[in-house]
Image (cartoon, rainbow, N blue to C red; front, side):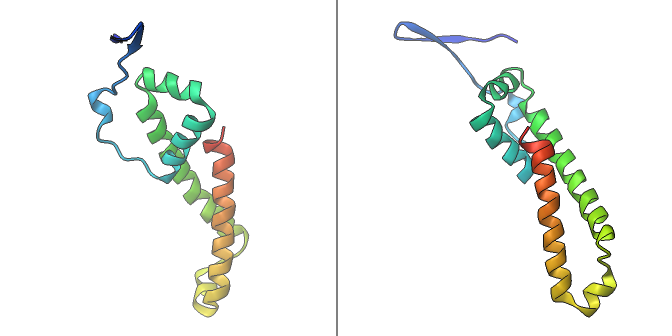
Length: 117
């Protein structure tokens, strides 16, 4: 990778322009959360990923892994708590409350395991 510099006063500053393949990519909420965490808490890791053109790949991988893990955890926790379609049909309010609890638990696990590390 070739880095070009521009002279600003007495200093040479690197031209940090992302490569063309980084322009059009979309990440989900977990990828955006990871990006924010890297920018604010792990600046050196963020800069290394950015400079090596690995940031997009990293964010997409985190987002995909987190979404897959979220779906798996939702199914697993719903089965463990015995939340069924029958409960949904008979007592919708209870079902919604239990599913919200499971959703929050799954998100917390993902944040601790994948996003904020």
